[in-house]
Picture (cartoon, rainbow, N blue to C red):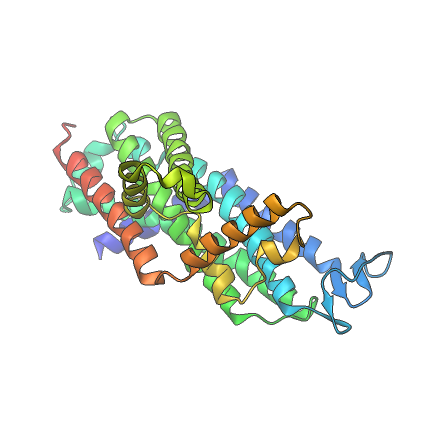
Amino acid sequence: MQFWALIVDSFRASLDRKIFWVILLISLVVAGGMFCIAFEPRGINVLFGTWVITTDAFTVGGEVRPDFIASVATEWIMDNILGWLAVILALIATADFLPTLMQPGVIEVAVSKPLPRWQLFLGKYIGSLMFFFVHAVIFVGLTFLVLGFRWGAWIPAYLLSIPLTVLLFSYLYCVSALVAVITRSTITAILLALGAWVAFAGVQLLGDTMEMYPQWQESRALYRGVQVARWAVPKTQDLTLLARKWTAAASPFDMVGTAEKPEDQDMMERARQAEQKRLALSPISLIGSSLLFEAFIVVLAMWRFSRLDF
């Protein structure tokens, strides 16, 4: 009961932060903006007919392609807004949860309660995840309704964006929590969490590049090392691939058309094959290995927090 009360208290504290309402406002603005746009066979209807952009780029047989709508939903709405902007704002909003807890006068009261330190840490950690979970539910719920009622595309699998983006946030927040426990610095926790995000994406990008250019695989030791590193770190980039797979969204390669130069065509084909190879992997493997990394970091942070002198 005390553990749950700690989680609820952490979440309630987040409601007092301005960033909570900023993210909520972003969700409302994005949903409202989407509602002012409609994809029709004749083109893109903006502001309920005020402006019509005539195009047949996303139609087949006089009908709007469902996979195009799913691609817009996953690649632009989920990935760029919820999976990028909202994640960064949430990291900023939650980065000081633990440093604030460890301030003199606050930590003495917290540790005086009959609650193990690891539970105290875990309660704050889960409370931070709840902060982002609520925003993910609101954002995905609103945009899901707009996709159905306004864009005419009911995509139940789009709701899986909620757990996928929460996973993305958790992969980064575990790093923020560990840094916060070690340094007790909010700024350092934010910067290193964002740096870890860049590093995770960089490892994946390097792995994709090696798949696209066989000559990069000549050094077998380097190639195997990159593959091991890619398996070990959280698969932040692959979460969007999973969303696109589950929603049957069109691939970006299908949306950009065919390259003119033969060398560009070969590169696009290799990139397509590398993506298909990633999509063929089991979601359990992709998510499971990432959760192992997160579990290791969380346990390390709990151990460190439990051994601190207050």
